[in-house]
Length: 150
Image 1 (cartoon, helix red, strand yellow):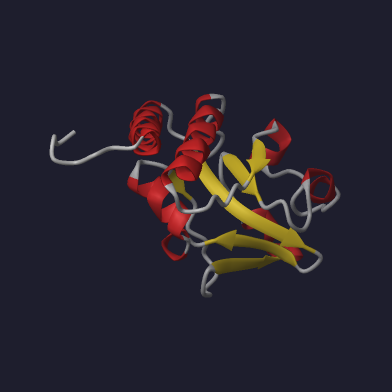
Image 2: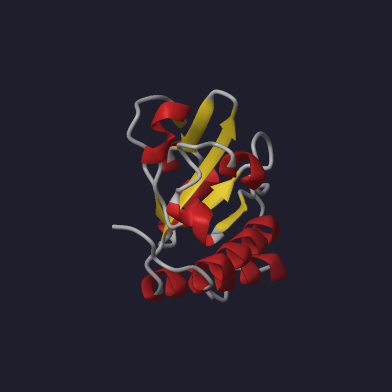
């Protein structure tokens, strides 16, 4: 830390969490899919369009880039939902949840869903403390997950 800069405890926690995320993503190769689902299908977030996902990617997180075109979301109708990949699903707390996804014939076999590697997609406020907590949680999920595809 430069001596001319005053660091708050939250900034220190943020830097520590970012380094831990970088270390874990180097050692543990899993792809994360940030998604939302509802009666129309599955919506996979584009990492370049979401600031938190951009931040996590800048610290090594491997995030799914959806194939369907669109701003912010790659939209997969239920007949095409089987094309959604990822070793870990980050599922929005809005919309369908795990039990709902398991009832969708075209998604029920998704490897991360079957393996139980589904976690809440936390969209934290953009401050040091919130982002540090989110990265710490993400690092733990990555550490506890297995590579399932590719």
